[in-house]
Image 1 (cartoon, rainbow, N blue to C red):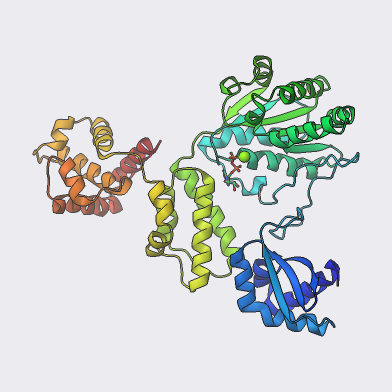
Image 2 (image 1 turned 180 degrees about the vertical axis):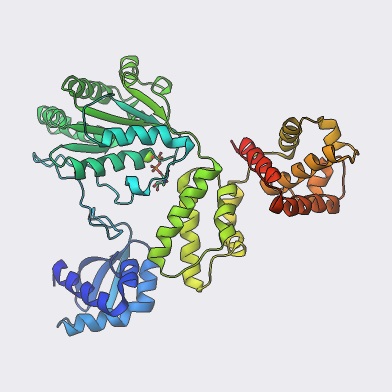
Length: 448
Ligand code: ADP
Ligand code: MG
């Protein structure tokens, strides 16, 4: 039996299990071979493998036997597919391999395209610049240098550029790789005495994208070679896109001439996410997950809760959502806030908000122009009491402090007083749009 044979069987199974189940469970399986009476398959994760075994084992075996194979068992291996094919059923293909001697772009992830990139204030400039480069028109800034912390979308934007160019300008040679791969290929060329080939190949691309360039800092001969490649391409007016975890001038052990060269084009940073962006990303990803997991529903409050509580990088946010969907499909229940607490306790613990009750009190006092001592003191006039309640509400929302702990920080008030304040604000917020806006603004001020 060959891989094509499996493809035929997979098609048959599509008819039996339906399009959406097929996409979630059967399509991700990679055919590895047949061992005596066992068919060997690779599943992207143990979760998928177990699921398939439990739910589709018999159907798969039956289908194999119908096609004339004496297979009795399925054996699974786990891990990402060896073949660099996109796994989300998209029609995309990876950018064309370079014609000469296998200088290939690193495999691109089909999900990392512009359509899946959510734009917000923190990343709008980087997004706009990436879009411009992806048009493949005249080179206006060279290089485009994208930088920012982990998980803020640098790799996503670079791969999106590669996809887009591949579609719009298929004649262009686009090469995307990490700085680490650049070094690896360079060292290999040195070892195999093929450095001229290496140079020629890298100088023949139309668009070069090097991800995580901070990696080559301190690696002297690789830096040197990178510098020459870079200059040669800029001289030919070929587009270069670079990413790093910090600004060019701040990369330690990066040669000064390289860092100043890198600053010649457009340097844009991806800022840390804010609440709106996180919520937007979660909504987009939840819609995608819902498609692939069938009919799982998610409570409205859940995404908002996650956007508030997980403010580290987007990868963590995504992992959290993925876990919720997997868990929910296992136990066959919709995703609720209670489930979130159980299922994500570890993530929630580590991304505990760093904002403190004291900070909240200070910001809220400033905002309403009252004295901090009044906020903590006994006065009960409206102009003082309302801001105080707002601060109580935000303390409950944004910190992990308990009501008694918050009470102690509000001049030793009882926890029932805090609860009353929180409830009051919730209640008024429903009708008072001004208060609602005040709170959203304060929340943003405190989160960034
Ligand atoms: P970086 O390279 O900056 O460390 P990545 O590009 O690998 O980060 O992003 C990490 C994950 O977060 C990826 O799965 C990516 O798709 C997702 N992500 C980051 N920013 C966004 C965004 N604005 N919209 C949608 N997904 C995003
Ligand atoms: Mg990256």
